[in-house]
Image (cartoon, rainbow, N blue to C red):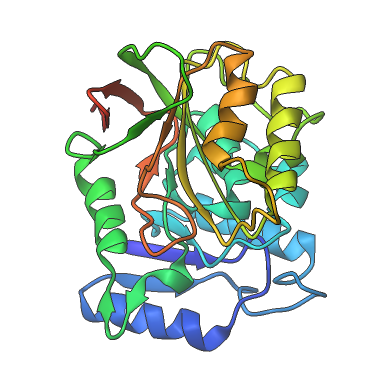
Length: 285
């Protein structure tokens, strides 16, 4: 597979990216980089116009099969006013701050895969299982993808639901509130994760999504990993905090999905139809 690595957000460490590329190339893949991938402007991977240029070039280059984001961090939403239909020309892979671009690619009809960023795909000298899952998803689709062992939360009645899988990083989604780039989650199964946010900020982000109407009509919310998110003396669990807000919207909640900033970050495709049944989330082809 011919993969272009671009950095639409935060600055990257060149040695981590090139090391990952070498491992993937040893497996027969062709890896190229955006012209400005290793630049730096403050904490960003170059100025906005240069990051946008790399993204547009990658998405319109006929010699590229998929575009893998180098890392998240911050800065991706700066590019949203300037993207167009070309963002749907080929699959993109990333998560965290990348979610703003993933959601826009889905809205434009493209293939947006929520999965590990490029700097995270190597464990030791081998491709991680989650990166292998991304490559399988790109080549074979989502039919075999499922998350099992979900735990129902809250006190709402559990029902089987089917709809597009949406969502991503909670802080990133809430930062899009009040902009044209936050889509409605109505009719969807909303997957959420986050990292480094104390409980009070997680609750504030959740309340913001609820109050702006983004969650109205959602079929269910599925929580992934909330990594290094300190309670800071709060006795309630995150599950209880989410349930308080989601009960107001009559949205059931499920916990324990294997994705996010923790050690397990299995990929899934935004907008792909999925079903929750018997504590399992499975995608359809």
